Structures are given as structure tokens and as C-alpha cells.
Image 1 (cartoon, rainbow, N blue to C red):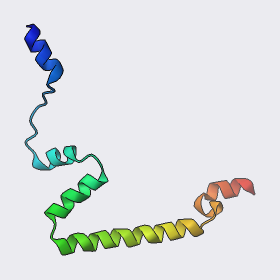
Image 2 (image 1 turned 120 degrees about the vertical axis):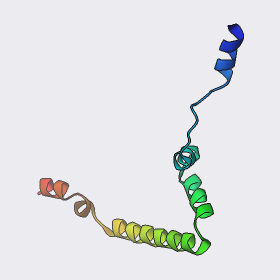
Image 3 (image 1 turned 90 degrees about the vertical axis):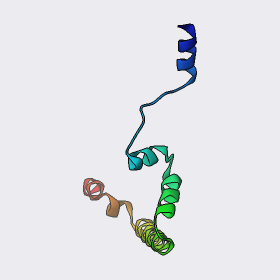
Image 4 (image 1 turned 180 degrees about the horizontal axis):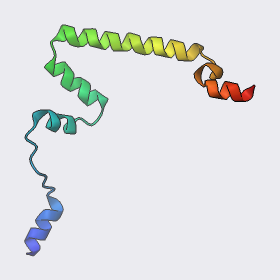
Length: 82
């Protein structure tokens, strides 16, 4: 029985996941892992197009937030200030 306890403490056995999508998403540690998975699955032109759209959207959002004042971002706070 002691050998079995030792094996359990060393080996972390999990139930097998048969759904490929769930298994791969569980393996991805962060957004870069997800991006790598998407790049492998999608045709190159599609992935590059989606990446360009995402980057341009982020630039627009950054420009909008950068030019906004606190009152624009939080109307409730502006109302309380008077």
C-alpha cells in the first residue's frame, strides 16, 4: 500500500478528455498559446487578416480612450461633480 501512495503523490492522474477542442484549450496557458493554435488551424491569409483587424481595432480603442476625459468615461462621476 505504501508504494501506491507514493505513486499517487508523484503522478497526477487525470481523467482523459476525449473532446479535442476542450483538451487543446485546457493546454493553452495564455493568449499566445491560443494564437499559436489558431495560426496552425487557419489558412495563413485568413489568420493574418484577422490579426490585422484586431490590431487596428486596438489602435482605434487606444486613440479613443487616450483622447477621452474622465467625465467622458464615467458620466455618473461627472454628474456627481456638478
